[in-house]
Image 1 (cartoon, rainbow, N blue to C red):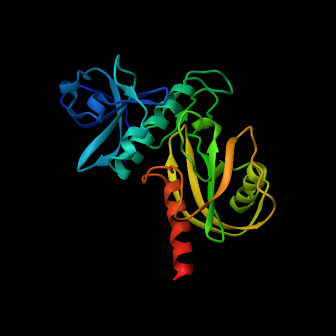
Image 2 (image 1 turned 45 degrees about the vertical axis):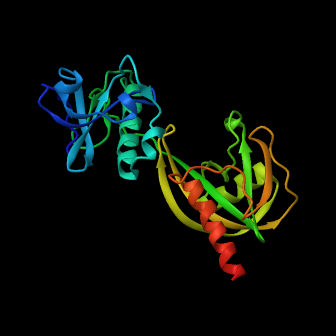
Length: 261
């Protein structure tokens, strides 16, 4: 896929990701589709970031006066579209934060062959940053560890533990460290499940399952408002089905049910 920057003449057709500051334009709660002229986008600069349902998905690094929303609203519609919109949102932020070279201060330009910003003065090359994160479902007999996070203080949502990978550690080491730091327990039998791009703001979530090993549960109040072991058939409100957190919870429940057969 070429990464050319086009100035729209109005005849271009496709899905329109208009994004700035981590928000995306969703008039009527939907991603705009049609010709650029249909949405008054002629004259704006745009890149093609992918294809969905046989039509181009365009990125415009800009904002509209109304209906700038979280890209999270797209997740329930279609996983592939959410990934493409997430790519657009992350690229928009990348281009916004790399207008000038961090080494020499010169104005940068967009590469036409890859997702990158180039400095013609000192020849530095910058790529979008991706933050690796781990997320883990932990089982103890017929229970699963769920926590209420500080960031969810306005909702009764309970989910599994997660955190960022630090410099110099493996994914498995990050899983064990984050779990101990947030819950005071140690785990074993750590195994990888799957991953999910997560544009909030630029994460790659890598999901694991694990089993309780030792320690008394004690949550970190700076990260969690509470944490507890919940029976597989008596859970609080958990994340929606389009998240990797929900998959880890469902996989844990499936394993418990299988062992009870």
